[in-house]
Length: 527
Image: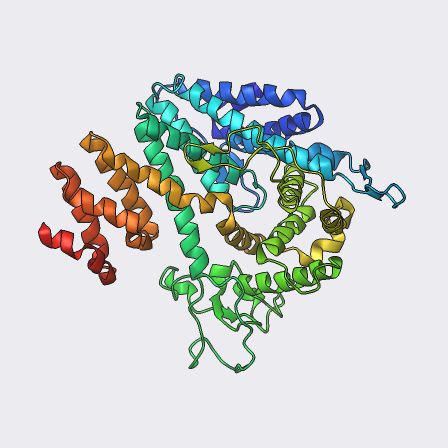
């Protein structure tokens, strides 16, 4: 498998995918081989990093993002992380018994809870130990980084950001968070890797902010339209024919005429944008896949959330008040989605990983627990690796009711609540807005801006460049008080190049957002 992964050419893509699955299967059954596999990855990336101007191919096709690919090595890294809880799935017959203090009370079987908790904590410690070793290997023990090594690291990061919203790669979020913490440490150390760290953190921040903007812009669950005209056309008065393509302005001219409306919200969409053939919507067509009833992605999400809320309330005797959080429902939908495709070994690993993470969140942290790994690396807080407390009676009943929905044999039963790939990706983007990575985004931005105290004007320019990249996707950050202070300071910087960069950036955004001028008027007037 190592020899196959070292063949950096698109002609062996199928062999790369087979190698990823094979190595993941071996490590899921034989834990001791996991460290060997991770060491192999570092060696492969290290050899690529020592090659001169070598293009790094991305051969591994993404299941939920058709047409997109990542490196097979990145896929293997995430698959190895996600294989850690797989032993629990492969030995589902095992059960653990928790006894109450009162021996007279009947003992309660609690399947796989402890294994799931331990496996997720094992993932965190493995990830937080592996990423520093990878960075040290590619940067000559954190002292220097060749152009090719930099390309390797940035390609890995590009891959991780590409799969962040995909349901089958749930370990990507914590992996990116671990990279972020290490890059912040590099910024603070002020060594030769500063530029790499600054560029990487800028990309991470921009991705999180972009996802946040898109989530706010798109309605996850639109209201059902009750008063509508059955004979309306896209051009009729009061009809919403905006589609998802900017009203047709972003698609070929000949593809703008064929549209269909959602049977729930009655918004109109181009068949071209939805990947639907014209013959599927024509009344006189004999197309075997002819569409009679059709719901848009947003309405599918709404319907599945409604179904899942009902299922969770029914299975939870202590939660009849309907206080089921939307994030809990979306996470359950992710498990349903992965269950449907669990015949794929890699997706089975992703499914068990999500279950283990879900149970960890349900298992309330004990105030007495002692962390066994640093919770704070470079001011970016990572999930603590700690010994879980004894499970309470209430938690046991809650998790038991959840586990009942998750056996692999329930795949057919849950298919009615399984969303399409596009809809699931939208739901994942919404779910990740409450993740630890999203919550740490402003901390990452603050650490980037701290580099404005650097003596080198080039580094200060790079900070403004990174800030501009983030502002391109979310101009609202320019309203933040700490960002305004940095820009005001930059406009009065001693270096002409820094002053020019700050004024150019302000001019670009004030013309688009006149309300920004209030926060920057005095300092610009002084210039």
